[in-house]
Image 1 (cartoon, rainbow, N blue to C red):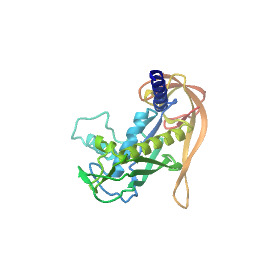
Image 2 (cartoon, helix red, strand yellow):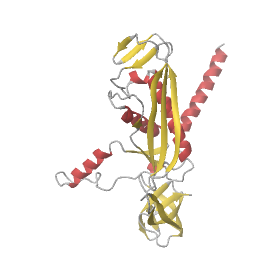
Image 3 (spheres, helix red, strand yellow):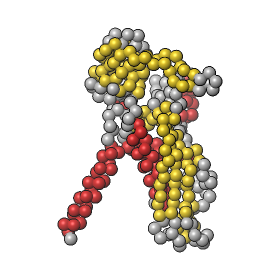
Image 4 (cartoon, rainbow, N blue to C red):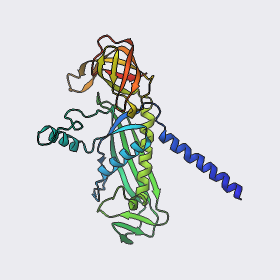
Length: 305
């Protein structure tokens, strides 16, 4: 009996190890992504500690960061960052080298989400006891959370992919619901409810979808500075860059805009050379031209080979 318990315990540890390894594995260069505020298309309109759309995007942002597979930019508080830059440039404060106007890092992919389901099914009768905004009844129920995740190319605004994910969790013999007062995202009390568990499952599925789709997209960065055969690029320790990494360089030309709709279709690109990293810093790297390079300039695109 003890041997059986030990065996199953070992199997469990191995399975858990695989799960954590899949999240922790950087898979080479990390894509720079930004999470936009979610759009709530459910009938739930409660605010609680945070609104449903804001809370859901915060949870996805945190899950992407914890996966350690991406560099995640904060877009929810972008207004605060810009305000800080404006104040730093106003002359009313000491000059700041960190909050510089027009110096925000750009993301390669923008992640947008739509909440399509956020509900308890099989709610049963309306009787029950209310505790701090939650209703506990005598019947079983199942929480259901549905999300649509879209990946958008920030250069062309093209939707790279769209996918629906969902999460389900049962109340385990008790019906746990919520009043219209809202949902306290991030609290232990919410995480323990069926809706909290269903939300986490949906978010985990969203991270898995995002990781699988972005894995096949080449890392993209920019040329920061050119000094002879030395080239400084926007790929560093933060994005998982290493000495010896090679990138193809593309000269950026005119934007291609649809004359009828005004939609940005892309930009003219021409492959002009290749560079190889020789020294890595936290946010950038120094590289050497290994082929071509004629006309290479600041702002040109680099893509991993």
